[in-house]
Length: 428
Ligand SMILES: *[C@@H]1O[C@H](CO)[C@@H](O)[C@H](O)[C@H]1NC(C)=O
Ligand SMILES: *[C@@H]1O[C@H](CO)[C@@H](O)[C@H](O)[C@H]1NC(C)=O
Image 1 (cartoon, rainbow, N blue to C red):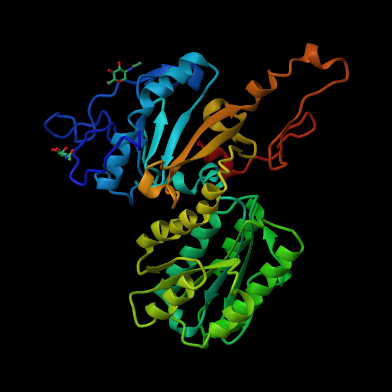
Image 2: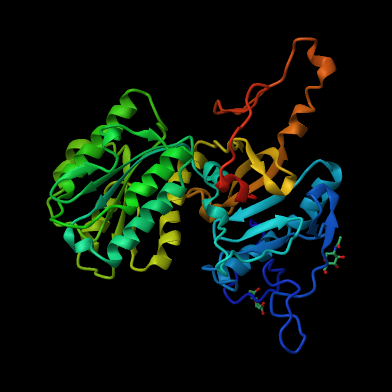
């Protein structure tokens, strides 16, 4: 569909927006992008109200629902409707089928009505879900370096913290991470993790988020020591054959860099540039932009300036595009299976999401491997286990499921005992 679609910057297109469907204005007319969308309770979807003829479109509040990129993507991906319907007809055990676009829209089949969160916004962004990120990137080792010198006080620190949390949200069990803060000194924000990388599983991510909240800005910033420390950790990890191997990166969050840092890159990262350096310049000030940009550009990274809290999400996501590229070159379009989770919409069944990245096949973009998004479907583990019926297993036989990256999805002895709030609220 993408191959045959020509981008039209003035495209007008009415689509079913899952927030606006069935909404009327004061004159009893359907609102724009609203329109009537018949919903019926469906037993297969745990009696939720769904429409099995069409998928519909969800957007996070901070993404404009008529942005030309959104309109073109939604228009192009209308082609998925008959595919979803056909899949469901051919395999009635299928549950949700979806396409999460790199531009931020989420096309979900069957169509549903989406309700805002308690605070009146829609924060669900398909691009920071585990299935999206795992499918879009290969495993990665990441050191986040954050400037906590005096100039970062106030709003800059708030933006920096939010940037770190957003980066952490892009990491999963296949990734390794650490966070270093620097001013006059270099300190690992978790002293117990000094000099190492830890698995970016949920516990460690949450732990880091708490520590990030406590960061305070003071003193003078010297980035060199923090960079040196990061390169050393990543090299050690690489040499030991641990971690993600394919992707190593440093995320530098600062409001400026003045030192002579070239020597550090020369010593630790050039000429191979095995570690990419992504730089996030915090604040409106542009004096240091050339320096910070130089760091990224000379280390195969990406430079962005983040001047408001609202910019954080979009800017952080950019790095995923850069890191998704090696996969295209290697033709390594792996299907991924997420870890088992409980789905509250499916009567707390244990589920996995099967997902796969989608790249543009347009000639002009083929060599860059532009990521269009990720397709996925939720699969109850029960359905998978039916493939190994008891009578075929024998008296003492049992079935277990393993993903291609070695995680156990299902085993008779493995039962998630605690289900965190996060896992209950994570529908997709
Ligand atoms: C672009 O979209 C507009 C509005 O839908 C339409 O009038 C125009 O013909 C389209 N242009 C092309 C080149 O298809
Ligand atoms: C889905 O909604 C469309 C538009 O309202 C409607 O024409 C169609 O009949 C609905 N499908 C089902 C299965 O209710």
